Length: 412
Image (cartoon, rainbow, N blue to C red; front, side):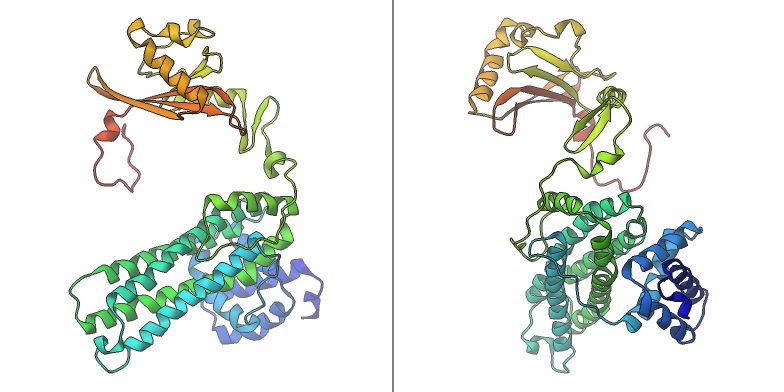
């Protein structure tokens, strides 16, 4: 197996071949010797690449997900627990790692509670109440913040480097964990169970949930995080750092030592549409895309500038209130009947002074329930730039009941 040394391509292909044989029914013991030689040389990024190639070869992400735990167990036995990547306190990876430490404590607490309930004495004799169980299990819901950041920030940047496997495989495993956490909490929410029923419910849900969570921690710290540190630039880590607070933190507060590089341009700059793009901090759109976008908004938009003149309105096919292009540049006060101009003036005055930032109305109009909102538009320093009017026919929304979780077209 000396040909594996310093030969990344050979290692990935050998790893793929061995893993495929595992999932075609090979005895794990029979491949461990060969796999051990590969694992001695391989890196987390090569494991990610291997899974990506399995998908590229035609294996569905669900199939890769289904076999993920099997080959992960073999790799885990051979690799052992590696030290988590070390980064400055507050770096996105440091925050992920510290969250994992807190998550391990949460699953460990549940395992300890389960051992206590397995004592032959009656459940009430353990000193644990159902409230204790519910509080401990509720902490696991915080994991959603950890997964959301990983999926929406980290995976997005990896995809820009052509690393697609985590988005297709690990995200699916995250969703499995989310379902297990919900099932555990639903089981603990049941009332009137006997001590034996409580014990069985805990046994049935705690161990599988804790195992799935801890397996994901292993994959993150031994495969995903090292791969990400190798692939992403300092500027990309800075962008992830700046976007992280939008999703929140899981069971910890982040460190403060990390200093992200100054954001010179968005990391997506290399993926801008060709020619004529309007660039925003959160992306870019061509003029054609902007025009099409405004025609499909489910709301009607009108913008009045700081001089109280109508500067823009959307031209969707089903506007609640008619607008014509002749009003562009017209004073908004002149667009209303004399009886309501004082209300317009009041809103503009309150917005301009900073006294208010929003106003809303709802009316019945020709059998429709119409929701009308006004928003003060300001620059980052708080300077008043104008007022945005958003109008929506909310009749259909008000009539919704229950849930719709499956795809269903209205015009089918």
